[in-house]
Each structure stands twice: as structure tokens, then as C-alpha cells.
Amino acid sequence: MAWLLARTCFPKIVFGKKFSYQSRAWSRGLLTAYMPEATAFPGPRNHQELYQLSVEQADVFWGALARSRLMWSNPFHSVSDCNFQQGKVSWFLGGQLNVAVNCLDRHVHKNPNKVALIWEKDEPAQEDQITYRELLELTCRLGNTLKRQGVKKGDRVTIYMPSCPMAVVTMLACARIGAIHTVVFAGFSSVALADRIQDAQSETVITVNQGLRGGKVVELKKTVDEAVKFCPTVKRVFVSKRTDEKVLMSDLDIPLEEEMMKEDVTCQPATLESEDLLFLLYTSGSTGKPKGLVHSQAGYLLYAALTHKYVFDYHDGDIFGCVADIGWITGHSYVVYGPLCNGGTTVLFESTPVYPNPVGEPINSEAWEWYFNVVGDRKCPVVDTWWQTGYFFTGDGAYRTSRGYYQLTGRLDDVINISGHRLGTAEIEDVVNKHEAVAESAVIGYPHKIKGEGAYAFIVLKKGFKLSQENLASELQSLVSKEIAKYAAPDHVQVARHLPKTRSGKIMRRVLKKIVENKADELGDLTTLDDHDTVKEIIEGHKKLLQKDQSQ
Image (cartoon, rainbow, N blue to C red):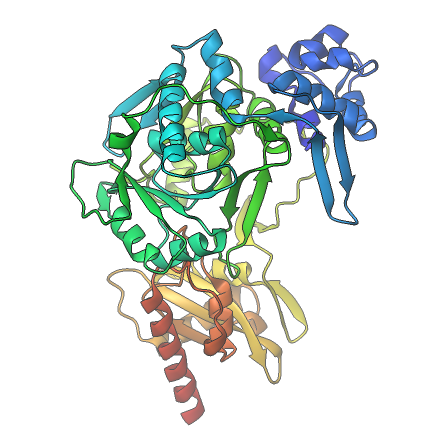
């Protein structure tokens, strides 16, 4: 993180003219103007020297930032205690603070009427604005409600809500009273939700009656009802009202806003150690069983605040918009904790980019030629960027066209070895996707008796195309042979209605891998799978394809 901050803490836009990061011509005043804590550092005058200090005197660097950027109820006595060989990493030992105080109270004292949240609702052209004073009052009401209902410091609270103000209030209320929140992406199924509740051993779940996304109603309360049937630890379910629709309430259910209005607008913040847990967040599960990752109080908050400020060049008065869902770490860091810790105004985006109007299709070559020649006047601006003269390794594949353009083909993580030739499956997919009938594809390597590995292509056809699997296979094999090599042509082509994906849209390649390896009984954890019928259909299709090949 020190490298990232040091490399990005002097964006050219701030100073209005071009600077060289390697130049030693920086003035001491310029350095301290952008990072005031530099006054505590005796030596550095430029980017490189600041970076060297952050590496060679890490405790000096991070200690100064932590003291300056965070509000402590008790100061820390040691900056860090890290031993990576033993897996021991601790920050700001002895320090005590409260994250909600850092994100709300101190800003309310300075500017209570500043807008903290701008909620862009799913309904087009509708928004709500919430000030820091209002956000603090809601947080305190909910914190008191949780305590009255038996939620204690250290308890896990599962949050299953869309990106709405009440979700932010819930996260901050948990932080205020010392409960550990675990936000679950509101697109996950009841099975995926239950799995995370069980793993976290949550006694409390907070949700909404219904969600709205892309103009459609999402029955989140019903999903929670299904999930808690398999979660004996759950003692209470708070239900917030996102819509006016009434939902069935069980003995576990508590109307959230109704209970909050009974509480006072002040709530004593808990005093928490630096290394106490702030939240638990699960991975999407696209590569196996979801893993619960824990984040502590001070280290995480300092990271979120500093990266928000320096990576995104945040300045006081900016309105910061991050469209990530709060169910993911980006939403936690750059929708909630980073902007609010810095006293900024943050945008909550509830909808999707394709509603109410679609974002569009990939531009074709004719449109690009017109855009480049007519609109761009055949001029291609080259941006002089801070990372020169090095290269950033993305892990994506690309090739250079005959006209000098670079075409990105996708990830190169999945490499197969066909008859001694190593190539990325993304390269084959890129060629396959050029076929006029192909809407989407996934190429998987499978064991081959002669070649070692072969390519197996799963294809989703575009609407309106009716092409036999045999004819499609022949055409795709010819296409790949022509554009890559004959050895790269897929041995098998299977047409599927859909590809297996997680709720967040990731193709579950490990599932396809098991199927082509004839290990359909070893698919592993499928709680994040969006459509289980898709997998069943693909397994049946694979069996039929093999039977047909064996009969020939």
C-alpha cells in the first residue's frame, strides 16, 4: 500500500502543469501541501524519497498518518508488529477508537448540514440526500435498537440489503456498538445466504421487504425467509421498508423503522481495540466454497481513507461516486468507509447501468472509422501518465493487428497445453466469438489420450440462430484452425442455453472443468450458482455428446 500511495499522491491535475515524479526539483512546501504529515518526516523532498521513507521507516510513515487522519480515544503505543513468516500482522497496538465516530461524529461537529449520502434510486431521476447530522441520528437510533434487542459487542450481524441509505446506517450502527457486520450481496440465492449466515454464526439478520433493481421487484424478504429455515442461530430478523408492499412477518421478524423511532438520537459509541474485528466479508465463491475474510478496525479504516483520497485524488467539496454494490469490498471501502472517513459526499447507486436505457453494444469497425476520422479528425491523443517508463502486468492477452492496433482477448490465467503448444483459452474464445451465431463461449481444457489436453468449447447461440451442433462444430473448428492453428481447434463443441455463472456474473469455469473431466459428482460448492438448471442441462448435453462420439 505504501508504494501505491507514494506513486499516486501527486496527480498532475492538482498542480495544473506537468511534473516528473523522479525529479528532485520538488519544493518542501509542495510536498507538505499535499501530504501535511510530511512535516513529521525530516528528509523527503520528492516522490522517490517519500517512497523510500515509507519502505525503510514504515512505522514512522504509517504512525504519522494514523495519528493525523484518525480520531483515537486512546493513542497506540506501537505502530506495528508484523512477522509474515508466522502470519502475524498487527497494527497500532494499544490504540482504541470507534469507526463510526471517525466517519460521522467528528464531521457533524464541524459541518452537520453537509450532505453525506446522495442516494440515486432505481427509479429514474429520483434521489434522496442525507446530511451528516441525519446519518448520525439514524445510526444512533439503530445502534440503540440493536442493543435493546440483545445485540452485543462481537456479535455477527448479517446484512442482506440493496445499496440504500439504511444499509449504510446498518453498517455504521454495527461499527458504533462493536458488532461485526457481514454484508451479503443482495443478488445471492437463499442457499448462498444461508451458507454465509451459518458460517458467521449470525444471530441477527437485517433486510428489506423488497428490493428494486433495473425496474424489477426483488423479493429479498422471501429469500431471507427461505435462508433462515436452515439457520438455527438466527434469533431476530429486522425488516426495513424499501417499498410500500406489505410482507408476511413471522415471530422472528421485527419492523425496523418502527422500532428505531422509539429510540434516542444519541448512542454511546463502544471503545474498540485497533485489532478488534470491524466486518466479515465473503468471497463470491466462483473458485470454490466462499471464504470469509476479516477486516480489523484501525488498519482497514486508515487504508480506505488514504486510498480514497490519494488514488482517486479526492478533495474537500468533491462529490464522489462509486457504483460498486455495497456487498463487495469496493463498495465497503469506496462507497461507505473511505468517503465518510474523509468527510466527503458519497453517491449510492441502487440501479444498473443498463436501466432504463441499455448501455449499448461494442462499437463496430465502420462506426469506429467514422468516429476516428470525422469526430477525432484522425488525431489520437497520447496521455503522458505517471507509470512510465515501466509496464503494468494485467494478466490479459492481446495481439497486434496488421494495422498496428492491439486487440485485447481476455484473461490468460487459464492456459492449456495441446500437443506441446501452450495457449490461453481466452485466445480460442476470442476467435470463436467472431462467428456470427455465437453470443458467448467458454473454452475448457480436458484430458486427451494423445494430445495431453484438448479444447472443449461451450457455446451460447444468439437469438434467432438455428444451427445444428455438428455444423457449428465444423465451422468453428475451421475458423480456429485458420486464425490460430489446427492444433487449437476445439475437439468438442457443445451448445448450451446458458453458461453457469455466479450471481455476480462470473462464469464458473471450475464447474465446466469438472464436467468435461467426467467428474460431475465432484462439482463442489454451488451456493453462489445463479441457475442450477443450467448445470443439469450442460451435464446431460455432455453425456449425449460423448455417447454420440463413441457411437461413431
